[in-house]
Amino acid sequence: MDIGILGTGVVARTLGGRLDRLGHDVLLGTRDPAQTLARTEPDRFGAPPFARWQEAHREVGLGTFAQAAAHGELVVNATAGAASLDALRSAGPETLAGKVLLDVANPLDPSSGFPPALAVSNTDSLAEQIQRLVPGARLVKSLNTVNASVMVDPAALADAEHSIFVSGDDAGAKAMVTDLLRSFGWRDVVDLGDLSTARGPEMLMPLWLRLFGALGTPAFNVKVVR
Ligand SMILES: NC(=O)c1ccc[n+]([C@@H]2O[C@H](COP(=O)([O-])OP(=O)(O)OC[C@H]3O[C@@H](n4cnc5c(N)ncnc54)[C@H](OP(=O)(O)O)[C@@H]3O)[C@@H](O)[C@H]2O)c1
Image (cartoon, rainbow, N blue to C red; front, side):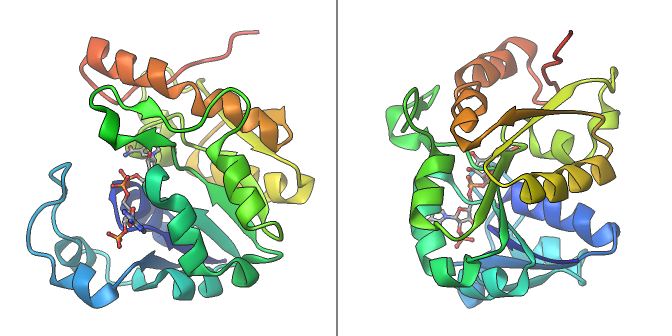
């Protein structure tokens, strides 16, 4: 499948690399491809500059947000939560009409210090803000509750039976995303319901950040025990 990923950070790279290995045709999107390729310093999380990563992932293309949106039958939003609405405006709401849009972003407010606060919560969510901006897209929220490496390789954790959530209004879009999750190795995919249910997984972030601090590793997840 042709997949566009909005973003060039660790999440976009990790998803892009895994999707490429699974045989998909992946194009990552960025604000300014030339500028992104010209970066020589590690990013704020210490990840190597994009050009170095791409040397090892020659099959994964790089274009603008608009080109990535046009490329994908499925498009992933993997941009910083505070910038996601701007990124999606650049991607083009009309281009995204009818496409499945998988939103993995978290609405973290980096200006609030550590731990970052949620910029939206309780009665709204980033996913719903995105859906209002891009009303024609078939939006699904998922994967935002786990670290990038866990997203694409859930079996790497000691207990492989942990849970991932999907939220969205379009059953066909959720089925497509669920198939993708299963191709990564996810077994317990919990369909929470319509898009407003994305508020819950987004509001898991304060707990995730505290678990990260307490456990000293991002390689963990929650498990729903029935
Ligand atoms: N890190 C994780 O393991 C993890 C896990 C779950 C969910 N998430 C969520 O996934 C998303 C991506 O996370 P990340 O750690 O890979 O990267 P990130 O640093 O949060 O985001 C990087 C991306 O955001 C774009 N961006 C930043 N400021 C922008 C602006 N003003 N306008 C337009 N685009 C802008 C960047 O564009 P350029 O390419 O142009 O620089 C880049 O592609 C975030 O929402 C994060 O909360 C992360």
